[in-house]
Every structure is written in structure tokens, then in C-alpha cells.
Picture 1 (cartoon, rainbow, N blue to C red):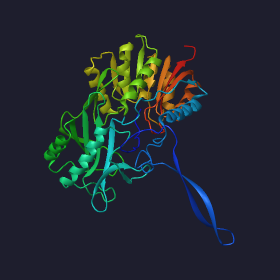
Picture 2 (picture 1 turned 60 degrees about the horizontal axis):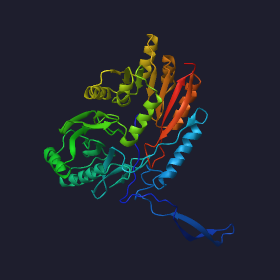
Picture 3 (picture 1 turned 120 degrees about the horizontal axis):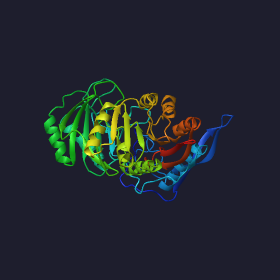
Picture 4 (picture 1 turned 180 degrees about the horizontal axis):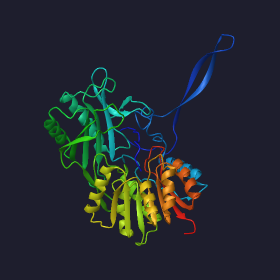
Length: 430
């Protein structure tokens, strides 16, 4: 799945309310009647108590933040049940024990107020208006602290932030990636130019404040674009990547690698996906949209052979390194479009027993799904980050020789409306 940026919500003391508490104000509203005379009406206005987050409603990311967590899960369960009811039963949603500060990837955009004060935060949903943020309830606390201190360092080093309207200024974004198990921390400084004034002193000052940082990268994005990262990078400190553990395997994560943002729930999601694949050690498996190889490498010890396909060349490089790092020899990686690759396999008389597919939020297109049908595997395990597009794709697959067996929702993004779902399909009459 290609991750879609999740919004942010922020506050000092997180806690879920277990019951509804509202303040009700009686407000007198003056209106004009049809005769032009003033008429006083009393209207009851219900105001909810203060949000857990001071910018709730401004950034637009955590739509469900102030909803008790159990209610969030019920709402997501109901949504998946309704969408997938025509195709299969839905098992109980897998939630989090602690649904806060789970994002291991944090992005902050930098700018300044009219008086020159440096600010950092998130774009308001649907705009490029910066909502200033100090702490986010769904982001790693270490990342938020690093971003706050970088903001202060910019002032000390007299570094100007980038202005999207004029194109002037230097400092654009900060991306922080943290290893949930390893504790390693990557900081990516995104600039409009490859020259960072006093870069050695800047790096030294940042590392003094945060010795937990294991690598710092300077990324150059000099284009007028909504993309965060540019193509050119220079490693200022460390190895230029971090490593983390997932389901007992070590993965190398670079600045541009796709890696699920919620490590705790990803382990549950992938474990369930591999369980549904019913691997016996004899299967030939295809990992489509493989990214840095996570699902395929984790499944490799339960399969005879894994063929992993990914279009992004940087991700393929990381995947190959990850296989070597874990001593895995029964996985092969191909840089190609997964749909084209599977159709070529079918044309050459090749076959596969299981296909894992983990597409973007937009789901798969008919061209890709038809390539799955053409290859005709015994089982398809579909990892989806949008039940609406999953339902759409199940409609196609169930009309072309497959039957959906079961679906399991996993709450990968607490406080937001998003829900991940893994669904298993079997070839009819296989």
C-alpha cells in the first residue's frame, strides 16, 4: 500500500472520555420577521467540551479523535461490514491497546508569519495554509520534539524558511522516521538549495539536543511542487538510513522507502495476511506492490519460493539489501509493473499458488486485476487501505472466478476515518 498522508491532532494530556459531556448554552438570537420587525427567539446551541487537540477542526486530519476509542472501532467495523456484506463475512476488527503516538513517519512543513516568526506544522486539509503544531497525538513524541528544536535552530542560525508564493527562502520541510523497535531515528532536512549555511555546526547543534538521532540527510527540492522530497540527497551524518524490526525480520528504511507508519498494527496485519494465505511450505508466492519487500520476506519461511515485484527502483534496492540482511535466499526481486509482470508469466506458461496484493488507497485498476485472473493463482490475499475500493475490486474478482472467503479489518490509523482490511479469496473449483 502506498501510504496516504494522515493528518495530525495535538494536545498535552491524551485521554479518551468514556462518556459524553456537553456544555449547553442558551443563546438569544435576533431575527427579522416578514413584516420587518425584530423578533427575539431563543435557540439552544450545543457546544462540545474542549477537544483533546488544540487544532482540532483546523488541520482536518483526525476526524475521530474526540470519539471514545471503542466507538471508533465500532464505526469502522460497521463500515467494513456494510461494504463487504455482498461478498463475505467480516471478522472482528483488530484494534490497538494504546491508540496514541503511533506514527513512525512524521512530516512538518516550515514557514513564517508576517512578523518573521518561524512556524512549523501541517497543511490544512485541502489547502497550503500552515496550521502551526507543537505536538500531535498520533505522532511519535521524539519526532515532534526534534521538529520543535529544529524550528528554534533556524532562528539561531538565521536560516530563512521557504515561501511558496515567491519561491524565495531555503528551509521547506522536515521528515522524521523512527524505528519502533530499534529506536533509530532519521531526520531529513528538505531545502530549496543544496547549500545549508554552517551545516556542520547545525548538525552538531541538533545532535547535541537529540543524541538519539542516528542519521541526518539533506534533501534538495527546488521545484514548485506539492511533493515533499526532491531527487538529490546528501548524507550529513550517519549511514543515510535506519533499520527496524518487523515480525522478527530486520528492514532497512531509507528516506523515500514505503514503510507502514504504524509498526504495532502492521505486525498484526501481516501476521493475519500470511495466516489467511494458508502457506504449507510448498507454494510459489507473488508479492505484488512489494515495496521494500516486507510481506514477501516475512512469508518466505512458510513458502517454497517468493517472487516480489515493485516498480520503484529505490524500494527494490532496499528490498534486495533486506533479503541479504536477513539471510533469505528463496525470494527474487523484479523491478517492473506487477500487472505486466504477472501477464508475462501467464504468457510464458508460468504459474503461482498465492498472490499477495497491497495496492495504494485508490485500489487496483482493472488491468491489474485482469492480470491476476489471467495468472489464475489458487488464493489471493488482498491488503487494502480503503474498504470502498476493496469492495469495488472484489466485485470484479468475484465475477471472474474467485470467491471471497473472509475479511479482517485492522485499525492502522486510530483517530482517523481510515481502516485497513485484509481479505482472502479462493479460486472457485481450485
